Image 1 (cartoon, rainbow, N blue to C red):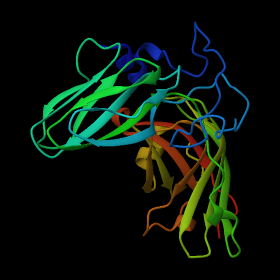
Image 2 (image 1 turned 30 degrees about the vertical axis):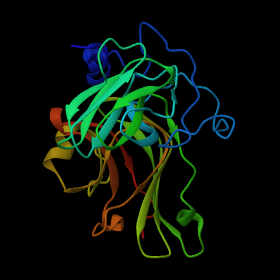
Image 3 (image 1 turned 180 degrees about the vertical axis):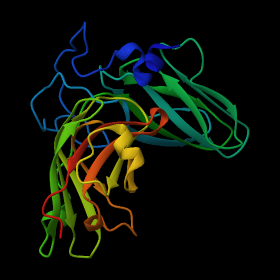
Image 4 (image 1 turned 180 degrees about the horizontal axis):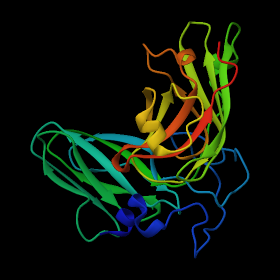
Length: 273
């Protein structure tokens, strides 16, 4: 198993809350799901040792025709890895990056192709293709994501229909959840100062249980609805509630790991109306 595989699967608990026996150095949280170069990207919060499950942050999209050197981009020093998703119209797409012994991509133009890199800092890609090509670049990071509240959450006519504080069940869970009914009638959900023990495949669900205390209780009682599959597990985050789901019919939010049937954390909702 590769290092990134160990990190992503939390093998032997290497990414649990305190990262024992090694504590990571402080790092600045990310300000958005798309990277923005300094100095236009001010720090949104103090550096922290808290880490998220690794997630993909968009870096840039580059396009060209034929053989060319793509516009350079920068991968942050703490990135786990980076990837490109490439498309082309005819022939074969070959993408080479300095510091890599083999091409990042070398495939026929029959659909989207994906390649991965591990270097950090400035990256320039040499692209070979018969015609037009397009590359979408993303970096995998484990920084918390600190997003500002959605404008619709504070717009006239928006109201809070539920809020609560997270508590741990099978794992650590802290922070708060607030559910809004927007002026347009849609619902959105915000997590503030949130952390749950990081792992892949976590689901944020609305539950009819008021305060589940065990995974078995959650499984055997009540019903639930999926709000979102969670790629980020630390920070302050916004999520739209899927259409057709009325959060006022539910009494708690549960962070659920379906592969192992484990309720990681939950928050009882108060003030629902």
